[in-house]
Length: 131
Image 1 (spheres, rainbow, N blue to C red):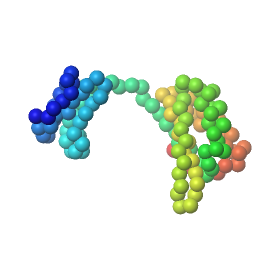
Image 2 (cartoon, rainbow, N blue to C red):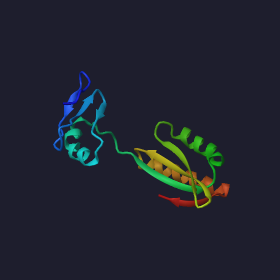
Image 3 (tube, one colour):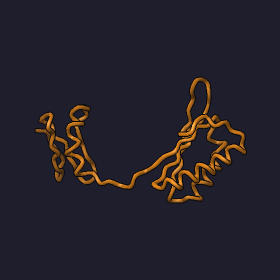
Image 4 (tube, rainbow, N blue to C red):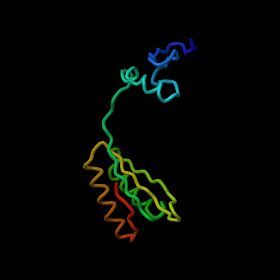
């Protein structure tokens, strides 16, 4: 039997003798993928489902500094309702940035992405892909 922290609850493992455990809001599980997968039905009862989050990604041929102000302005306009992240990439000698819009409201994502794309066109930045 493995040692577990005081106050934790065991999570049944149908695949092996090593249980998982939960303490407060931390769940600890074995790292073997097949064992972890077999334990998921027993883990689900400890998880609290939140609202569904939606995303839209726009990949551009530019650097973050050229679009930072635009992202900041949009983030401030939709404060608390929209998150915007930028992720630089380097592929086949091309420098770019993926801008990710995240919200629980699809309308806000679509509206903010549309506003973003309109501004990008005025900056003459090449749009690589929209997901």
